[in-house]
Length: 337
Image 1 (cartoon, rainbow, N blue to C red):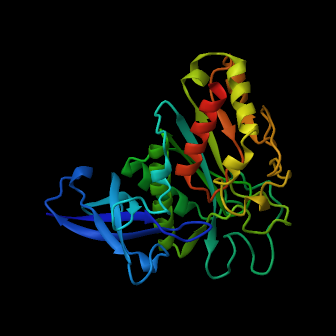
Image 2 (cartoon, rainbow, N blue to C red):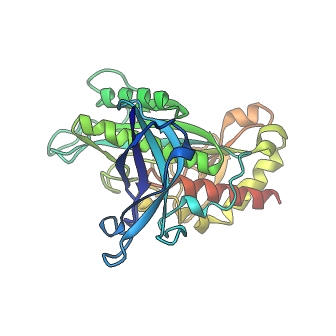
């Protein structure tokens, strides 16, 4: 029997990378990562090489069943230079501490995007729907737009083994969210990128694209943007029951604004304005239940005796989860050192 292996990678476009993929057919494939060979592609077509030295390598790093195709697999890869060294676009290779004591829950927001109107579904041509408010966690055709895409995507992620923990309609018409939970920076990144890939491929069937821009409708409009709120914890946070643990971590984040904002997504200044449940991009704050803070301390963490997690609310929807998780691990460990 022959199997289809879809090799997936991140291209070299700036400031935000896109997903690329191509299919390799293998005979008598057993479904393991070890059986996935190295492959190559034309980097001159993805802004990752010049035409006179165009070969880039694909190194398989994670594999998932592809429930949308018969006898198929999704293979997440890292991009390497022809000499086998990590390509400059390879964010996964920059993770220098892959501590699986760190648990991540990414809340991936996004807009479905109608290619014909260049607007989200639910937006009338040449105008706007009613103000945000009735769309969050809504039901009914008057408020929820594109549910078929979202339901198909959730089913595919679960069948692929992605640890998807939920979905919901978000505050704007045509805006949705899914949540992914994983342990370690690489695992959190792999599963989020594969979930994004499945979302984009699913939306294709409906003639829709996915818009991950943090403020695709414009900074000046009275609409929330799209984020990828990063929930995280380690053993000290989950078990010590000590408020000072959380204070030390939050204070460390406040001392490293640039470290985080630099990897929290392009055009995030359009979203982090101090309005619409955000803190300004150049300021830092934290507080219990405060959705206008840079970091929110969930009320459940306090009620459980200061055992739980933190939520960094600054991360934009278009951020690279590999880089986000790596920065969080680094700053958290510095705060507790």
